[in-house]
Length: 338
Picture 1 (cartoon, rainbow, N blue to C red):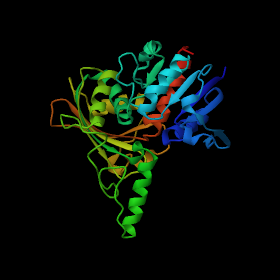
Picture 2: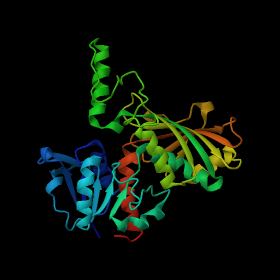
Picture 3: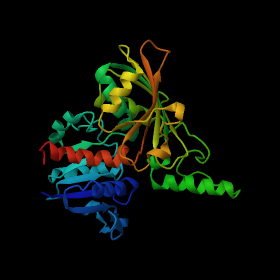
Picture 4: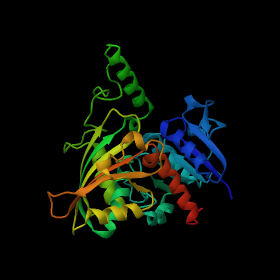
């Protein structure tokens, strides 16, 4: 059986990646519809190597008879259009931040909490977590299952693609201008991103944290365990694609690095690459285009009674966004929801 699938935000970086992954994974779609804003109507987007789809207007599109809506048009647009699609009977998988903390909307990473899918009928919407949260809970889940996690301290090294195509263009143009000795002022970021790191992603909150840091805390609690404490510092770095996380994880009981390595190795979606003596560890460049979440540099944290340190890397446009969205759709089919 084939499905009618609408991709909202099809002209954006994540939307284009969703289309790529639908084709790569041979998703059983009889029809794929590309949706975006009115100004993009009539443009063509790629679907696989040899197919082109003409973009339709998301605001006026009739979702009647559409089985799945894979949304990534921005939170403000999803707030209006996702409930409209859901009311027409379309199951919406939303990649924006709009519905993540709604108690009636499941927040799902299929390898980590597939049981949460059971609640999607309340609003006919499923939320895709934040990109950094996804790769963090992927690494934490197999460890939490064998030695309960108390606390996580995480520092992120997040690529500019997490802020969209204009952010990627800004990094490129600023880098080029520096070599040409022609300074280019930032417009997407608050400070120069070329050859620099910016300890701010999203807006600042009253307690001094950024919204991105707050997301990592509250989303981890919703997905994995409300008892886990999370302290995050999120940093934008001059990398085009790929997010990296440095994790310090404190457990309630001792966990040997070798046991952790074995548990991670057995977990679906994780690839352990951890021979630092031979310079075998994964960097952001290494992960681009891959579906896996990579874990390297697994070692003891001697500053707490039961602690480990990890380095976690993933393609933020894939597992951090588009791939997880399509995997949720696959899980709905496999579990018989559609």
